[in-house]
Image 1 (cartoon, rainbow, N blue to C red):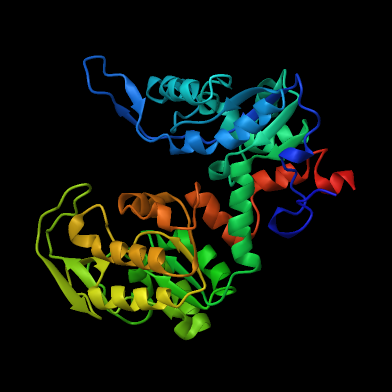
Image 2 (image 1 turned 90 degrees about the horizontal axis):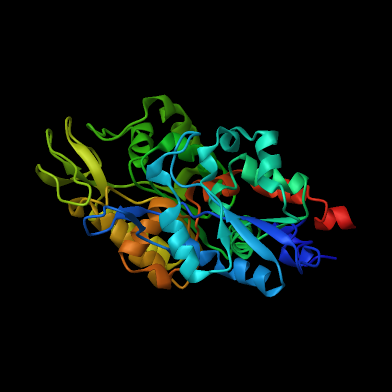
Length: 397
């Protein structure tokens, strides 16, 4: 029986479930969708700005190589919309991979072919031609029903790589056996994108802390004035329902840092306009862009007593220093808490990294959208595909 027979990994084949790999060719789906920047110099060539995602795949690649496999990886980069685009050429990624794992080959950008996002069976057939096994180590795209994610497991012995295995183990564990009190912190701008995961989390958490732009739709639902703050009028009714359902378990901002009418928000720099803190109500024309100091202390106190913490989404427009304090205080509270802490990728991971807190967080996910999808639905298309592989634990029993 596979050691993945129970818990969040139940039925998912791991690397140990692959057949003998000596002289076998293995295709590994990785997530090397890394940030690129122009190198200094007249050539104008692009270079990899942050190689974290490439390094994160190394344990899986090394494990395969040590067992005698020939290893080829495939990834997407950016959004080239189904045709070759020099802006998303993988040459800079290939250069880094050649230094870190010189024995590993890298195919061209998967999204240069429209068959990838369309999950075209003919593209799947071309992709796996010449390969004996498949490994999915790309958690960040496992919520997508794309050809390279869901196609190969139906045709080849397959497995979850070490990175994907760890993501499922940690995030799935939050749904199964979190240490109480379980506190979730959810921010970001779009409430519509988060309502599903908020409903799912409310079935598990002891406290749900709400911040970011999405908080103002909840405040409107609670009867507060939000001025010119980000607001999704179409979702106010659903927020009312969630507040009625959760009662005091949902914590909303009690004060907000807001920008004057006509002011501008900076991204990487400080914008223009007057900034004030308002208690409870935001005047007409003013745009709230961060939680206030009283709210930040209240949230930090709640986090200090947690047993498990999940954080996804900043508390404000942290790219503008005037509205970064809420995210900074919450981030420092998450890092300082004795709780087991998990950060759900995306902007939260960027904030944690920028604040220098990453080494004080127990687990930082590599997938923002995938993290939320897994918490909301308890499963992902990429995981369903792996469970259907011929060598999956259930298939072998």
